[in-house]
Image (cartoon, rainbow, N blue to C red; front, side, top):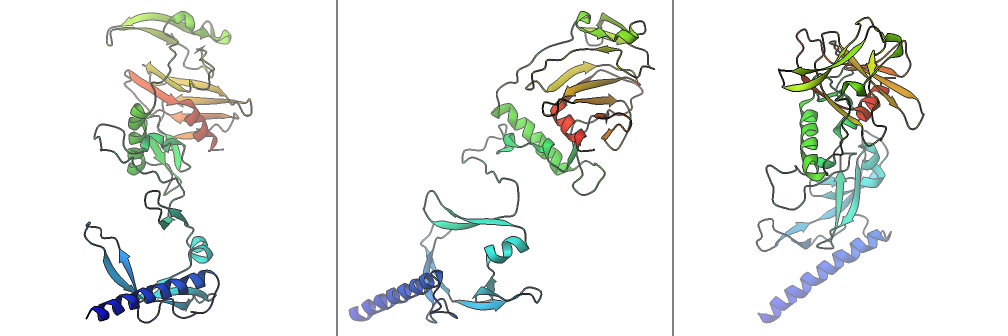
Length: 334
């Protein structure tokens, strides 16, 4: 009885070694086992149990098999019972336009193959306790507004508009949710922004020389918000701004925010100098309804218009625009 048990153990060991030898030979280019990767007696491999119990065993009977796709060139595949495995690097990678590679687990030192179906870098949340009011995963590193399929950040609603499924920009709920989680998470992952305050006094504004008589700048107290404000009154027929404010030229200060109470036909313009070409880009923000969101001026080069939405009964609103994002989205229209 003791001898029988021992002989079974030895027999099992020889089968396992034989299987490893054949597989190793195939990797080295040997054709000694052209049809069968493991002998008919089957190989036994330990498998980690997901429920933490003792590892189980399963039988594998791998064989080479010829295969084709749509009647094309014959290739060598591997069959495991009813499953057939196609070669990844020489066929699947190009045919399905996917990415994959062998990686080594840092904890177990075991090799595994990772198949990736996205061009974007896959980020996984840190292995820490989830905080329902803290940053969401790695969303603080996202940049939804600069994606190719984001047409613009709506000047009416302040959320991205997509062209992922059609040429006309529309609201895509998943994209909007990602945009919100991105900026919410950045409040935790990034230091407080550096701010520069300008334009709170009337003497910090300038009147265009050509429109000095038709433009007025003054200060007054607005009882509705209980604050002192700067009031700019210009001729509605002006084609160029009647008054202007010079902003800080530091490229890091690219977000503009201000409170605005404009009439129904009011507009404002932000002029930006591109560092790469030294060209000036004009962004006009106009109170009109237009489904295009942003479009190029047909008569003036490097001039673009963002739709703020028509408003017949204007009220105080906070305008917040990332000028670099707006310039980047606008230039894609040309």
